Image (cartoon, rainbow, N blue to C red; front, side, top):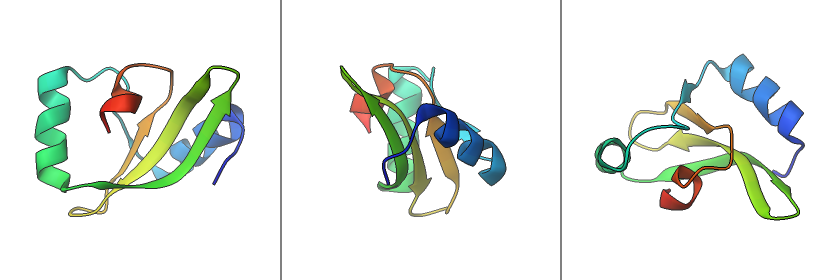
Length: 76
């Protein structure tokens, strides 16, 4: 679901997700191994592409958020 960044952050806060915006490369790899893969719940995009995203891990059902344009968006 495409939405504004403001609404995406509000959704993330309501879901009580885990912020993974600034995880290191190694931590992201461990998280991907733990979850298997992620399902996209919502994203916000602008002129230069995706700015933020809310995801749900398949194995644990935990909600995750990448709330700014970092390389972690592209690692998922």
